[in-house]
Length: 86
Picture 1 (cartoon, one colour):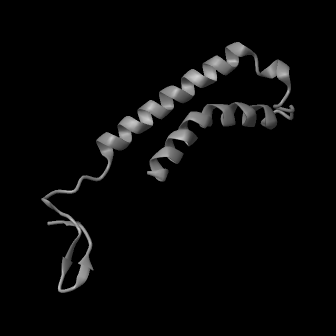
Picture 2 (cartoon, helix red, strand yellow):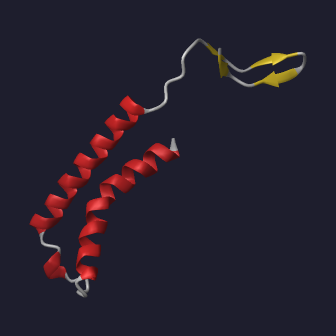
Picture 3 (cartoon, one colour):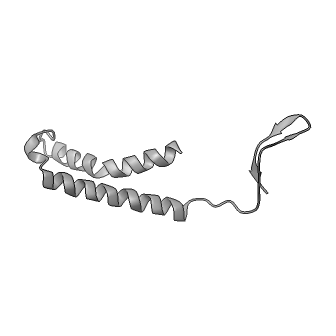
């Protein structure tokens, strides 16, 4: 669960990170208010949302699929047997 959340949060933050890195590359301080206008922030937020949605869809479509029936965790001979796919 945490992995999916962190991947999505990273994909959303990626345009902001790249924008700041672009300004650092050209030896400008990226935390000046004039560089972060509402229009740029909106554009970066829309790009971040698009990346997050595309990433979630790709994870759902391209993620590993387990085949077979799921056997839930149960007790066998007094010991807990973990859940598994058969």
